[in-house]
Every structure is written in C-alpha cells, then in structure tokens.
Length: 167
Ligand code: PNS
Image 1: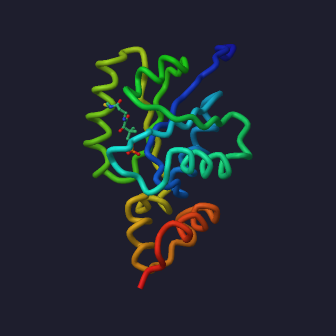
Image 2: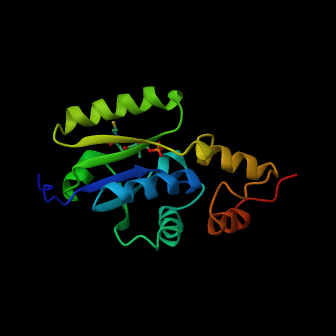
C-alpha cells in the first residue's frame, strides 16, 4: 500500500526557561516523525521567567540549528489558537515520569475540547533525561551545583552571566 502523502506540522510548546537536554531530546524525537516542528515559546511574563522570550528563543535557535525542519516561534494567548494560525494539527509534549501524566492529560483534554481537530502527541523523554527540569537546573545552578550535561553549553554560559555564582 502506498504511503499517504502528508505534511505533518507539529507544535512543541513550552516555557523553555531555559532549554535543557530533555527538551532537545524531545525535539530530536519529534523531528523524526513530523515534517515541520514549530517550537513555540510561551511569553509568560506572569511566571516571571529568568530569561526573556527573546533569549529563550535564541538559545533554542542555537541548539536546533542543525535541524532544517525546526522553527522557533513565540506565542501568547491560547495554544490552540496559535496552532490553528500555524496550521499545526499536532501538539507535541514530553512525558518524563508518571507524575507528569495528570497535568498533561488535563491540558490535552482541555485543548481537545477547545480544538477537537488538533491531536496531542506524547513522547517519552529518554530515560537519561527523565529527571531534568528547567526549574531544578536553575535551582541547582543557583546553589553552586554542577549542571554540565543537563543543558547545552550555550545555555550554561548564559546562566553563568545571569545568576550569581552559588556558594
Ligand atoms: O513548559 P511548560 O511550562 O510545561 O508549558 C506549558 C504550556 C506552555 C504548554 C501551557 O502553559 C500552555 O499551553 N499555555 C498557553 C495558554 C493555554 O493555551 N492554556 C490552556 C492550556 S489547556
């Protein structure tokens, strides 16, 4: 049977404050199964992120330069509205551990209610990355812990500029 021609556009949304190797692992997995992957950075000023949306996008752009099918964008408002504007039919999200599942299920079902034709696709992060989160990276770094291997070198350099060295 001939393969169906398609042009699968997926959005990979998140705060990315900052990008970690866990996010990059998911991007790499996404690239293998979709035709275009739009990484969508939430402009969430109320969460008072450490990095501005421009900085978060720059870090993503640097780290994903080798993937032709990846684009970096930012959005505010409803994710499904942005997905419709971009003609994305898939929302990609990563699951690290079962503890992520409840929050992700809630979001996926709410998004489905808002936009029934957009499908959320979950991928499992590689187990080597299953403990990494942006929040813990910032906390560990801020307290003087080693974060090499958790974030790309460019992100580590920016963290060094941004956060005072730990004790
Ligand atoms: O990296 P995060 O913080 O887990 O990403 C959360 C994100 C950006 C996917 C979520 O907060 C989001 O989609 N926000 C946009 C507003 C929206 O659509 N809210 C309803 C989601 S059910």
